[in-house]
Length: 185
Image (cartoon, rainbow, N blue to C red; front, side):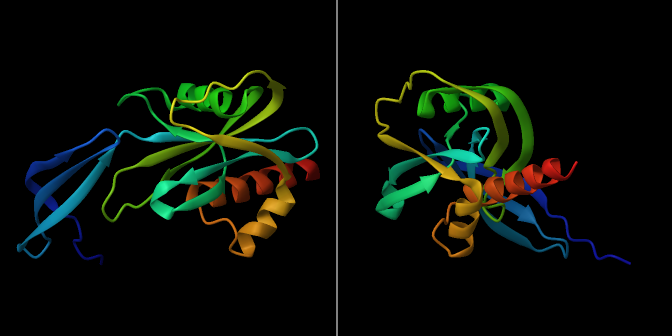
């Protein structure tokens, strides 16, 4: 028999309203009847793309990440423009804006819940193939370098701990497995 583990939200209050996130305090009733405070970060969500060419190379972006105080290597991604935006449309937009690429073939990989202990952010991840190059359209505050890297090299970098971004790790490993299985068919 399983124990009751769900919490019941009693009430909540907005503590901070930001451009990217909102922070709320939620009072919850625990399964044993006691109450507890939960700090919850609310996020509109995001989309991310693994653009793979016919040679197994992935279009990756290098950009400075201020919270980490360094440049990171990531798959192209960006937040939804508004709550309820279609994540697939956001993925197509972000791919074009950050890399100049468009894709003929798309596949949904997964929806990654980044940090469910305190945040509701969901990143919708896609595989894009059949790529065509166009023009980038960076946001005013975006400075990005594009690099094409073989997917096996990216997996090796992940295993060596050189890539730490969770969406990139999950999406690259899923993509390599999908591509491996497609070759076997």
